[in-house]
Length: 491
Image 1 (cartoon, rainbow, N blue to C red):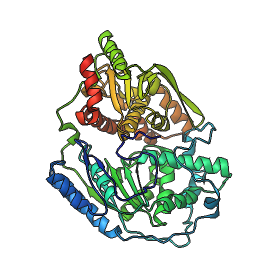
Image 2: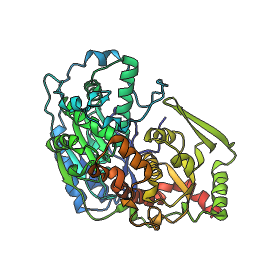
Image 3: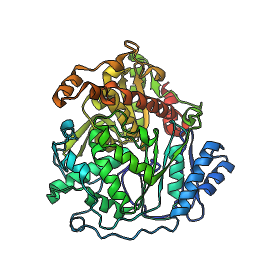
Image 4: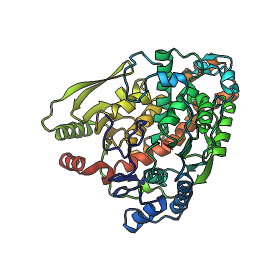
């Protein structure tokens, strides 16, 4: 069960109605709830209403973006793509849902054995994957979608959510892009394990996705994983050929996706496809609205010492009330995540357990289904020498942010220095021994070794977003009254 405080369900679920009693809007500076019915209001009408009601601040850059969304809204207002017949295998197999834990097999994440273009993958060889022709006998040319990019905190997600809410079709999905890719990997696995499919499963998956929703809204599109990069060109092509309309937000323009990634040349057709099937629009106001709210609570406690340990212990007791403290086992995908201290919907867990050990985005997405507040202890100051821990921490934050989970943490340094490498300002130029071994195993060239995977360029970009999100997670709109009152009693 996904946390009900989330503005939209993180899982891929088809909308079942067109009029919502409340539209939760995350503008990265303010969390506003407004009464809205998509039947009666278009995106620009709803945006204007929220500005006039004082719920949003007038922003010329945002209004330009809303105008683009309004144009798309008019293009798809009466769009009803013809239904392509589902492949027989899709008709036969049981519908795959993100929350389904029926498959108990141990699942391994995509690894770098995929890189050799002659290497066998679940799709055949890499070369075959990118050489395959379209599998749809008669492609549907749907309306072009919209790709909105810009700096962190400018309101991209809020505007996309506003658009999503107003579109009247029930055949729509809104999901964080990382969660979407997790869902695709899970569907691939289930097709392989339960259906024994040996051919390319992407046409089957695209047919199923298109039958569930012809409007896909992705938040935070970014590509950092070689496995995702290898899938996306084919998947995008298959979806667009089935009449799917895509709206997405990103911190980067399409041409910068998977920048410096390994075998990026194989991903370039996916970028061309995105630009061909989505209008590209920049939303760069220069304002990070997440940092505009100066009413912040002390949810990040530093430095690490006896005093901050005592505060977090007393806060845990304050939040749990009389609820018994117990260990909680979270089982999924054949794995178990043990939270040693939990009480109801509150968890107290160390950074080492969540980010120092090998956990994936799927682990964190499962974790946030079980808790509303996470007390995270002993967060170290991270440098690019701690690349794995930093990546996991940022992935954890993404899962918490998308589900509006509250965070209180004890930290080695204050927020502004959390990702600052004081010891070695040139640490991004250093390749760790483990990465050198990986390079040797993959037979990577010197040029490939300078990709973002090894230089930390992708992490530096992600750090900026993480700090912006952590800043917003201090505000009253995020913290809420209950946690705010508990903090007041222990600080």
